[in-house]
Length: 200
Image (cartoon, rainbow, N blue to C red; front, side, top):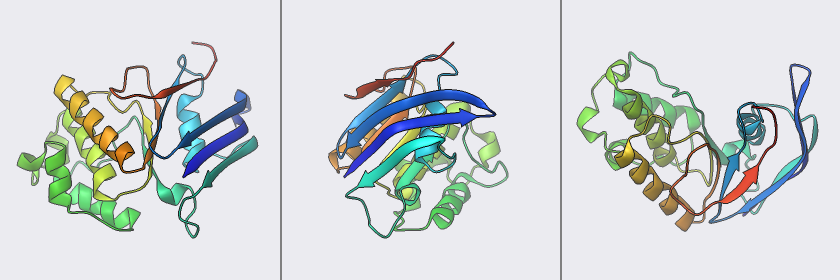
């Protein structure tokens, strides 16, 4: 499986964010998208996820599921945790399983893998920032997709959480998945750097 972009140009609110961007990542590889604030790191992830429209260029996936679109084969984990505060931890994860569809894995096991097995019935409103991030990460495990698009994935995680997530990312890569992560911090795994220029 190979994800590639050629001559990608992004325009938002009439302003060119970046242009002429080339990138690629194959199964088992991670790409760390770096650059100053405002350079377009999040915009690139959103273009790949199909949440924004390219102004020019192409983004293609070779070797994936032929009947599925690229966004249907990707998880987009934004820098904000998409949780419903009134729902419990388990209810939030089950909501995402139903919404995303596809082959679902055991929700309780997914929560245990991120260290939230003690909080299954706790309303998400009571979670700390780090726990909310762990719950968002559990979504990556509960519905398996080969492409992980991660926006500042280690934000709010303590040292133990960062180490845990590094292990989960390495496991994903070892199964043939690929990762594109926008980050200012080390990911804890071997990654090729894609630097996007811009103004701070």
